[in-house]
Amino acid sequence: MAVEGKGDDSPQQPGLTRQALVRAALRVLEREGVGGLSMRRLASELGVKAPSLYWHVRNKEELLDLLTDELMADAQAPPREGDWREQLREYCVRYRRHLLGKRDAAKVVAGRLVPGPHLLRLMEDQLGRLREAGFADADAAMINYLLGAFVQGFVLQELGPLSASEAMGADRREVATAAGEQLRRLPPETFPHLVALAGDLTGPSMEARFSFALERVLDGLSTLLEQSSGVREEGTSHE
Amino acid sequence: MAVEGKGDDSPQQPGLTRQALVRAALRVLEREGVGGLSMRRLASELGVKAPSLYWHVRNKEELLDLLTDELMADAQAPPREGDWREQLREYCVRYRRHLLGKRDAAKVVAGRLVPGPHLLRLMEDQLGRLREAGFADADAAMINYLLGAFVQGFVLQELGPLSASEAMGADRREVATAAGEQLRRLPPETFPHLVALAGDLTGPSMEARFSFALERVLDGLSTLLEQSSGVREEGTSHE
DNA sequence: AGACTGCCTCTAACAGTGTTAGTTGGCAAG
DNA sequence: CTTGCCAACTAACACTGTTAGAGGCAGTCT
Image (cartoon, rainbow over all chains, first blue to last red):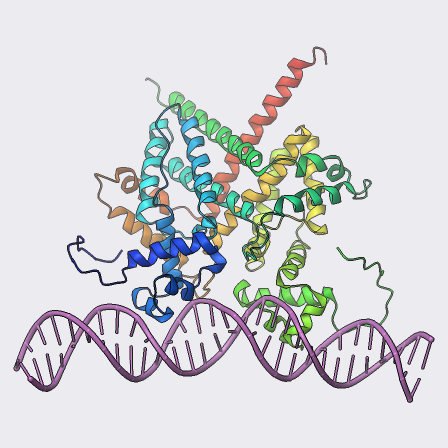
């Protein structure tokens, strides 16, 4: 929002811009993680004391809103090659990689429903492809939300508890295999399936889990498209 | 871990048990939300000062691990009626309702991969039904993870930003419709789809979005089941 | 020139956070 | 009585987001 119409024609650099603020926040996030992104640290990154920030920004939440958009700045849509399914798959794979690439990005982005300009650009593109693929308007809108929520939710699980004590992250894989050991040790008469499937439950990597889930979702979209186009062919007598 | 073998045969009530601690934490969570669940408040809920808690619990993270299991205590599996699809749907619908019922439950639960006993009970049950439905072992394990991540991720989006400033929650719906207005106001030449689908994008309730997404996922599982059973029929020459 | 206004940053402070060190009270066993 | 353990305590550290009020510095008007 905001009506800041100026086209960067003000030659003086007033020291602190919202832009500079957000960019510094991005650097701090990358370096210290979401738990280390405090107003004081951000201020010191800019050579300034904390309360100064509150002149440029209402509160931390607003800063995170801006940061959310900045995090989407260099996310790019996949090339337009292959059928709709391949394009959507690539969309999700790239989005996940993007979120995992920037540190704790998912924890910042999650739950903010007002999309910034960069996200709007991506939504516009994806909606276009969905409509071209033949999805009904209402379905395209739903699918657009579904895919975003799906990938973000998945990456959130991957990142671990929201209250990130940091420090861990390396042992996260170890914990998983240790949990596997513990599964096998359960009483087989009351937990037969857990014991039998212990390996299948704890073995697969996050990568594998994600791409399995993604294929299921894409299958689901596939049948939706077939159904609706089938209905349309039956419904309209000619054509 | 710990080797506390005792079988509750110590008759005296030593004032503070891990059990009592977790139950009190649940009450505080319900009353104040995840942002208001601090060690000091939890202590005062028990008529005690904060540092006392650290005798019973290593740190807050461990407390949240315990709380996570307590949150799953009264989650119940759906009745075994209808086909596997109906049962899985009911599983997800109930799980979402359960998470939305307890305040901020999803924010506490999200990302903790070590399942407590209550969650183990649910997993065991669900895995059983998946295998009965005909899913391969590896697939059943994947689906079990997929459904959990899917519902939790979805509810997380619903709850709003992880840094819960609280105070909002009522205007969340208003913000959504306001965002709809803003969508319609975009330049139609660069954002034709967003403008055209503004109503479809912002109209549907979270309920509707969830059940749409859920049906897509179930469709995807359906085709997976058909494929694999088809392969099996073709693969084994007789039967 | 002087006064004034708006912009931007500062210091000081408040109320709260998770967590550790060291200390005390009470109770059972030797 | 003394020993030792359990389970609570006080005091403190290093933080957090945020506000109030002061001060300087630019440009503009009288």
